[in-house]
Length: 194
View 1 (spheres, one colour):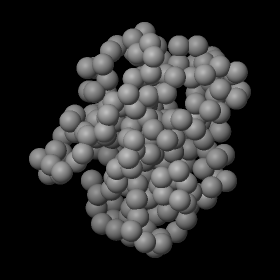
View 2 (tube, one colour; view 1 turned 90 degrees about the vertical axis):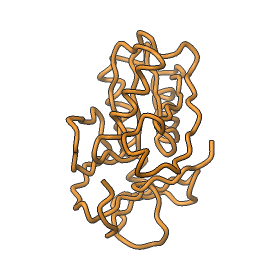
View 3 (spheres, helix red, strand yellow; view 1 turned 135 degrees about the vertical axis):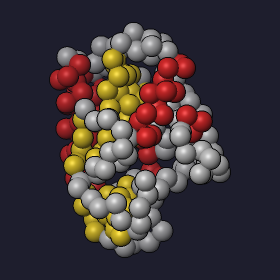
View 4 (cartoon, helix red, strand yellow; view 1 turned 90 degrees about the horizontal axis):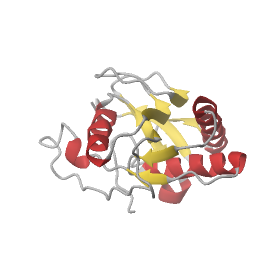
């Protein structure tokens, strides 16, 4: 899967302040993994669906941690939300990524949607709409590395790596080693991205 830039995910420079470094991200993902296991009472019927691009990579990392703890492989997939977004008219150049469902699909299972940054809630709403077209999970939960606030819809994450109060005029940039060659979360001035 190719890396697709998102407004809250990439930076063109080294501006701003690092709020999570590689060790902080590692600890946050470990904590999220344990929270998911506790809430689900183990890994039975659990599926992780990452929202491209960084959400997919984070979902794989969480699944690896769950596997190391529980000794079972947790299915991981990718859920593209491009065609379900309510801002396609404003940003028609978005490139859809493939949706990849894990073996067994999502019907009757506990699905944890994984994304890098929760902001307005519109991406998560699009993910819920996309989920309706692929199956009917028993439960859907949300895990995010960063919750920056400013919700425009009544959506809340079940598992959060870091709550990061921010101004609308700031950008939260998540960069991951396997995509960006650096592992950090940075906050910087950058304009309203809603």
